[in-house]
Amino acid sequence: MAAAQDGDRRAYETLLRQTLPYIRTVVRGLNATPDRVEEVVQEVLLTVHRVRHTYDPARPFRPWLAAIARRRAIDALRRRRRTETHEIFDEAAYETFADPEANRHQERPASAAGLSAAVADLPAQQREAVRLLKLRGLSLAEASAESGTSIAALKVNVHRAIKTLRKRLTGD
Figure 1: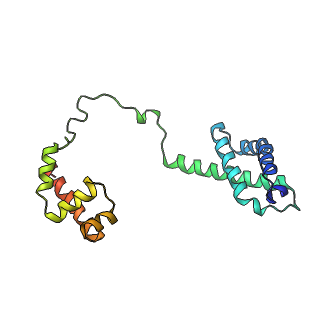
Figure 2: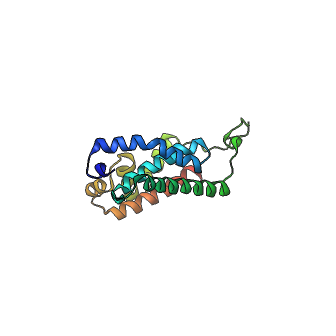
Figure 3: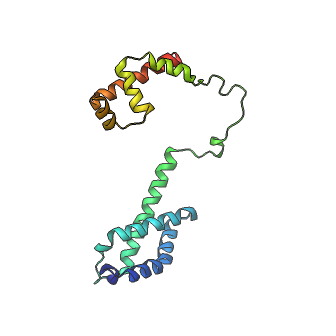
């Protein structure tokens, strides 16, 4: 680790490779589920990388590493406990079933002609904002420069235009 702290890349790679079995052993001792062990091992490696400057070469390396591994394993246990107390695991929760009544009242998209007519009926400033920002895809800065309208005014106009179009096309 001392060589790795001095910038020796190969020593650092060797250190990480050789410490993996030890880290897995420490983590496995606290985390019984194998699916979580590798996740915690990765967190330990990231932590070692982030705090490697705190290692004191005058002291033993293994207790320093074990402390980090234990803390990450305990953090994972706490996270899992919090999740399990607030969430319910149900394998069937994401299954869907065909229902003849499903999606019957789904909104129909407006026709292109209807949309064009609705945009044409908008006030001039709102129509221009929609044309520049939504139809041509310009950024706010580009649309502002082209139209001579402030960015704030463009935002307001496009917001009002979308609200008006939604009312006209969906009847909301």
